[in-house]
Length: 364
Image (cartoon, rainbow, N blue to C red; front, top):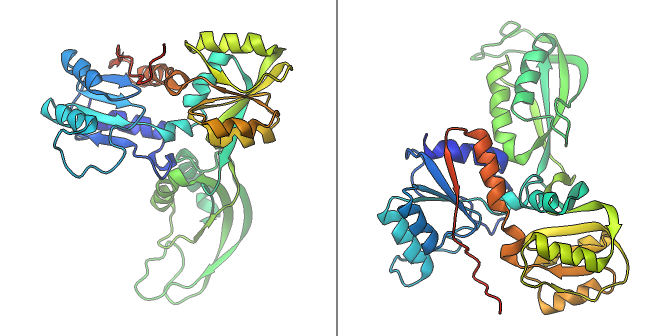
């Protein structure tokens, strides 16, 4: 197996194009053609993790947080990032990051949290905008199934838990082949009319280029008439945070104690208890204070995240219970998520979870 095999599978699950614009996901160190037989999964690619990979003879590290986040102008080994990069290069260790593209995935970081909390009726807390398109393509009646199947297989026409979605109208297309053309139907210089379907598909921006490529591959015409329209619709299946419900409402104290136990928290920080039971739970792995107002707008009883600053707690405004469980604690089970996914895709490939606790925060 080569690194590109792993990259392709990860990026079909969480496309690089779905990462936030400040992020740096993908293969950060190494060559996609390098042969490998195992991988080490971690939250943070620290020097200790790289040394673990060297000791266990594991050539590939998959990290949730990118090792290279800001620009590197030199490799003088004066910072921990430079030292880790140098150590990886010297020992032929490749490094891959899957960060906010996994955060924005409805089956990613937050889904793992929801699973641990046994939540139901899940939905994205803050759906992404400007990531959907409408593809309109005109297909001759004789080739509708051929082109439609190709586009559906490429990912067009998928809406939530439904696929093969399109809308079509039968009409008449007209054209006149000019000198230099090689028409599928009709004759040079003569105007022709053909029964054609106007077919409309919803297409995610992440796969738009692939869908268009398949359209050209399977459409019989030399020139394919089509429109691509950027939509303002929110994508309810991609975005920040999630919200779900407990099967039964529970007291605040009971829920917070359970939360500490599930996420192995030495302690948690929270706003004043509101004296009401918790049923609707909003949450975001990692730094999610920017979602407090979204959680309030969706009538959540509690919002769980990390890295919440002093003034952010005031945003709760006695409308919601806000809880900070710690950054590492909120994302620790991401390792299990990635391990399970890769083991499902590659049964003959060794997937290891790091033995190193990379949490830089200590408690006393």
